[in-house]
Length: 122
Image (cartoon, rainbow, N blue to C red; front, top):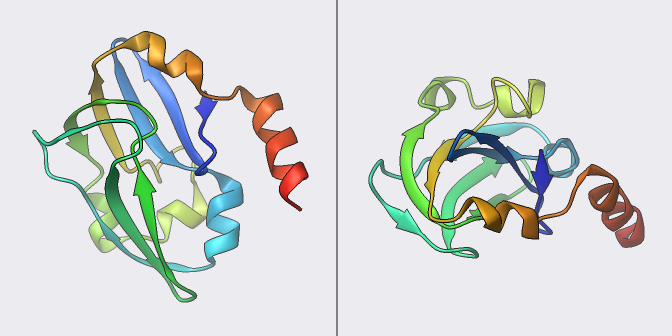
Protein backbone atom coordinates (compact mmCIF):
# COMPACT_ATOMS: atom_id res chain seq x y z
CA UNK A 1 0.00 0.00 0.00
CA UNK A 2 1.22 3.50 -0.86
CA UNK A 3 0.05 6.90 0.36
CA UNK A 4 -0.33 10.46 -0.98
CA UNK A 5 0.21 13.75 0.84
CA UNK A 6 -3.52 14.35 0.40
CA UNK A 7 -4.16 11.24 2.56
CA UNK A 8 -5.32 8.82 -0.13
CA UNK A 9 -4.08 5.23 -0.13
CA UNK A 10 -3.37 3.12 -3.20
CA UNK A 11 -3.25 -0.67 -3.33
CA UNK A 12 -2.06 -2.34 -6.51
CA UNK A 13 -4.22 -5.14 -7.90
CA UNK A 14 -2.36 -6.27 -11.00
CA UNK A 15 -2.26 -3.24 -13.31
CA UNK A 16 -5.16 -1.61 -11.46
CA UNK A 17 -5.20 0.50 -8.31
CA UNK A 18 -7.79 0.41 -5.53
CA UNK A 19 -8.01 3.83 -3.83
CA UNK A 20 -9.47 5.13 -0.58
CA UNK A 21 -8.68 7.59 2.18
CA UNK A 22 -6.41 6.82 5.09
CA UNK A 23 -7.43 6.15 8.66
CA UNK A 24 -5.85 9.51 9.58
CA UNK A 25 -8.06 11.29 7.02
CA UNK A 26 -11.29 9.65 8.15
CA UNK A 27 -10.47 10.46 11.79
CA UNK A 28 -9.90 14.11 10.83
CA UNK A 29 -13.17 14.26 8.88
CA UNK A 30 -15.32 12.66 11.55
CA UNK A 31 -18.57 10.87 10.74
CA UNK A 32 -18.87 10.53 6.97
CA UNK A 33 -22.43 11.05 5.72
CA UNK A 34 -22.13 11.23 1.90
CA UNK A 35 -19.76 10.23 -0.92
CA UNK A 36 -19.91 11.67 -4.44
CA UNK A 37 -18.32 8.95 -6.57
CA UNK A 38 -16.63 9.43 -9.95
CA UNK A 39 -18.12 7.97 -13.14
CA UNK A 40 -16.84 4.73 -14.64
CA UNK A 41 -14.88 5.51 -17.78
CA UNK A 42 -13.70 8.96 -16.63
CA UNK A 43 -9.97 9.61 -16.90
CA UNK A 44 -7.94 11.50 -14.32
CA UNK A 45 -4.39 12.74 -13.98
CA UNK A 46 -2.46 12.92 -10.71
CA UNK A 47 -3.86 15.77 -8.62
CA UNK A 48 -7.25 16.02 -10.37
CA UNK A 49 -10.30 16.23 -8.10
CA UNK A 50 -11.91 12.84 -8.46
CA UNK A 51 -14.56 12.55 -5.72
CA UNK A 52 -16.02 14.37 -2.72
CA UNK A 53 -16.62 13.08 0.79
CA UNK A 54 -18.94 14.94 3.14
CA UNK A 55 -18.80 14.53 6.88
CA UNK A 56 -20.67 16.16 9.73
CA UNK A 57 -17.69 18.58 9.92
CA UNK A 58 -16.99 19.48 6.28
CA UNK A 59 -16.78 18.43 2.65
CA UNK A 60 -13.41 17.22 1.44
CA UNK A 61 -12.17 16.62 -2.09
CA UNK A 62 -10.46 13.39 -3.00
CA UNK A 63 -7.64 13.83 -5.51
CA UNK A 64 -6.26 11.28 -7.94
CA UNK A 65 -3.06 9.90 -6.37
CA UNK A 66 -2.18 8.25 -9.70
CA UNK A 67 -3.35 8.72 -13.30
CA UNK A 68 -5.81 6.37 -14.92
CA UNK A 69 -9.35 5.49 -15.93
CA UNK A 70 -12.12 4.72 -13.44
CA UNK A 71 -13.04 1.05 -13.90
CA UNK A 72 -15.08 0.49 -10.73
CA UNK A 73 -16.63 2.48 -7.90
CA UNK A 74 -17.69 1.25 -4.48
CA UNK A 75 -21.43 1.89 -4.92
CA UNK A 76 -22.12 0.41 -1.47
CA UNK A 77 -20.85 3.74 -0.11
CA UNK A 78 -23.89 5.52 -1.56
CA UNK A 79 -26.08 3.83 1.08
CA UNK A 80 -23.36 3.17 3.68
CA UNK A 81 -20.78 6.00 3.59
CA UNK A 82 -19.85 5.18 7.20
CA UNK A 83 -17.87 2.18 5.87
CA UNK A 84 -15.07 4.67 5.20
CA UNK A 85 -14.98 5.39 8.95
CA UNK A 86 -15.38 1.77 9.98
CA UNK A 87 -13.01 0.07 7.49
CA UNK A 88 -11.02 2.68 5.54
CA UNK A 89 -8.60 0.10 4.10
CA UNK A 90 -11.08 -2.69 3.40
CA UNK A 91 -14.81 -2.21 2.71
CA UNK A 92 -14.40 1.60 2.66
CA UNK A 93 -12.40 1.78 -0.59
CA UNK A 94 -13.78 4.41 -2.96
CA UNK A 95 -12.80 3.58 -6.56
CA UNK A 96 -10.50 1.54 -8.80
CA UNK A 97 -8.36 2.92 -11.61
CA UNK A 98 -6.79 1.20 -14.60
CA UNK A 99 -3.34 2.72 -14.26
CA UNK A 100 -1.62 4.58 -17.05
CA UNK A 101 1.70 3.71 -15.42
CA UNK A 102 2.28 1.25 -12.60
CA UNK A 103 5.60 3.03 -11.95
CA UNK A 104 3.68 6.12 -10.78
CA UNK A 105 2.69 4.22 -7.64
CA UNK A 106 6.36 4.20 -6.65
CA UNK A 107 6.24 8.02 -6.47
CA UNK A 108 3.89 7.74 -3.49
CA UNK A 109 4.99 7.29 0.13
CA UNK A 110 5.38 3.91 1.79
CA UNK A 111 3.77 3.40 5.21
CA UNK A 112 6.81 4.57 7.23
CA UNK A 113 7.20 7.71 5.13
CA UNK A 114 3.49 8.46 5.44
CA UNK A 115 3.60 8.09 9.25
CA UNK A 116 6.57 10.46 9.37
CA UNK A 117 4.66 12.91 7.15
CA UNK A 118 1.60 12.82 9.46
CA UNK A 119 3.81 13.25 12.55
CA UNK A 120 5.54 16.28 10.99
CA UNK A 121 2.14 17.97 10.47
CA UNK A 122 1.03 17.61 14.11
